[in-house]
Amino acid sequence: MKRWMWLALVAVVVIAAAISIIALPRSPEWTTSSPAALAELQLALQSKMKLYHADTIAHLEKAVALDPDFMMAHLLLTEYAGFDDRIDAEEHRAKVLEADVDSLRPRERLYVERMKAIRGKRTEDANRLIDEYRKRFPDDPAVLETAAAVAFQRGDNEAAERLYRRLIELSPNWVIAYNQLGYLTMREGRFAEAEEHFTSYRFIAPDQANPHDSLGELYIILGRLPEAVQCFETALEIKKDFWDSYVHLVLARTMLEDYAGAAQAAAAAQAVPSCPAEMAEGIGCVATCLELEANARWREVLALQSTPCLNDASMTDFCPRITHRAACQLGEWEVARAIEAKVEAYRDEAKEKGEAMKVDDSMPSLLHLQGVRLALSGDRAAAEKAFAEADARLTYHNSFIGLFKLYNRLFLVETLLAEGRDGEAHQLLAKVRAVNPWLVTRFEEDGLTLLGLPRG
Image (tube, rainbow, N blue to C red; front, side):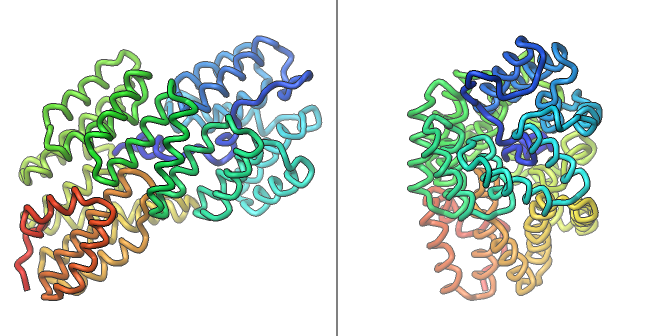
């Protein structure tokens, strides 16, 4: 996946993620001299609750055009720069950092001060500001969601779940909380609970795209692929520029070996007039890479090295991972090691910048790549260790990461079988079957092999 796809799979959580629909009291909750700008912010917040990023950005840009000193609109735009490269995040951030906080309302002041703390890499201060605010205003749903989103991002599932449940108690129509509870429970492998949350989300907001998309992601992990396809198609009927659903639809149709359908989904995204060029290219690359891998067309995969599918890809994306596997299947070890080196560089750069999420994303990818190379080059014991360490770092966070975890486990099963450790292999296979029986059935039909390792 391209960078924009990863951004679309997680909540925007640094400052703006948690500001959602607020029923306006008698006095406005946001500081602006322009009623029209205030109305645009409210429309932006409604779109944000639906995860309609392009619509949100459009309303925010109108808000700052109407009131150049509208701090919350500027602040939100800094966070949405990750979804639209045309946004000058530094320009909007400068406006926020120069703000006179004494002229702002308490919640606005919190977000501005928190941005300053994050900008200064004072994470503890940023979190302390939330805690202090919540002591004064414990029932402010916007800041409650901020606290929940931060806990969600740092992997504190227990705290995040508690906070999201409290948010629903305070504001039952705060629908994004159901979505986040679904992903929290899915992340932990509590799939029945995840389905309940996503189904509730869809029941409350059936006219929004995201509830259908989220449920479809769960169905991919569980191997309920026809249901997943229906979910993504429904999401796109509701919102043609809901880009995540095109990528998810490509994935589901590829798994069903409907390569024409996957290509059709990619083409449909590219045909939407508002589809950014990078996004259209990225969806097409995912469709191409997945089909080539599914059919073991390894030489054609390696030919992608001279195309944009690899030139601009993050080292944790689909195409580099598939290209690495192709290199290993063909014994092109220098190519494989070069890809691993890029992942290591990506990880080291993220460490240096303090980007913990990117570090966490890259480590299981690096371990898995090393496992593939080691398994196919004959070092089964080291491969087993690498696959096991990758598995320990992976969750069912979303459909891509969840499938990555399941396939990594199947690679480990095959490695254990190659070592003659059939009992351990079948114990692990049973765990995969408990999650996704469809995937295990296909694995068995292929002779319990993905890599082609000889049985021990």
